[in-house]
Length: 449
Ligand code: PMP
Image (cartoon, rainbow, N blue to C red):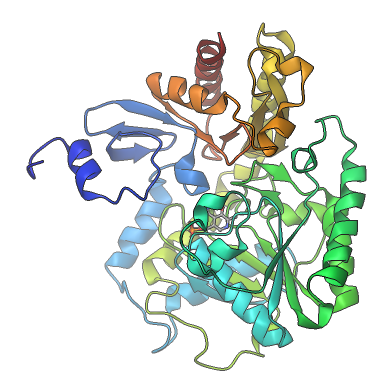
């Protein structure tokens, strides 16, 4: 199309086909929980840009801090000298990290870069190579992080060979085992920990294994929280075998689950914490935190990057942390989480179609709804098991997403299981969430009737 054609049509032609896109809307403005398109459509955003705009679009204090920084210095290159906003950010981050031993940091732009940095750190610090990851995990789309990702094959398919030395083990999620939703979680934890130990005996020896990498709440793979007992078990296994425990909190961090970091709830100490997304509310920033001792084992020059920890992004991130304090964000997460979960539970219990909802799970405002995905006879079969077995089943989540879109609401689904994810801005109001729930109910009923 000509350059002056409709923006979406132009984008469809000139942007790679290798991207999956929820809608054809062209976003022009964003304020809080709302996005306005080039055609003037006002959308209710239950995606927060995939868990990035945790304080809503264009939070005034974050915008102000970034704008102010643009007038001072935008590129304070970290291989040339120290960046003042980065130092300031570290001062602000240290008190909110999940363990005092995590006192040494470094920054990049994307989540995937930070995951790769964590792997490099683990390898350099332990002088061992292999990484154990969880079935169902998502860590990014680069050649290394695609190798670490086990939520679905599309991220690696046709792009190999990917980074070697990655071994996947069990995560305590009933649907991975082909078991019903009622399965006792502690039994799943026991089985999964047994599999992790077997992985170290049968697949990758402790003497070759650098780390276990886990999302404390699996994101793209279905919104599944890791039970505290599982995280404690992994910590024990790491300690016994001299492995590092790396927590990828790219999606679950920065208040998303009701605490600043999801791992906090378990009390487990990670050796390396990975963060991104919510930290700068839309400005590209990611990072890792670890102990001074581990970080000192890397050779000077082995880390870094042209745009590592951009000055404007760091200023925005400090404003984010300030806003968490000033605006009682975590308090709102707890209230809105209760509101959302009780709405979904009542929909499951009261609605004519409630039997199609198999599971409501998650923490804070990272809530997944898993459908029993064969509309005709969901109640009589374990449909997650059917999905896992590769049988073609008609999924409900994509239909609900499409019906939400018709009603001007953005809502995401997740990987191979039939799951919708609610991941709105953490400062969403009671009224906005009620509107979202009403749209969801209407869309769900339209999708399954
Ligand atoms: N880890 C997790 C847990 C994620 O959710 C994501 C992104 N969805 C990533 C890593 C990769 O982050 P990015 O897309 O910024 O590279």
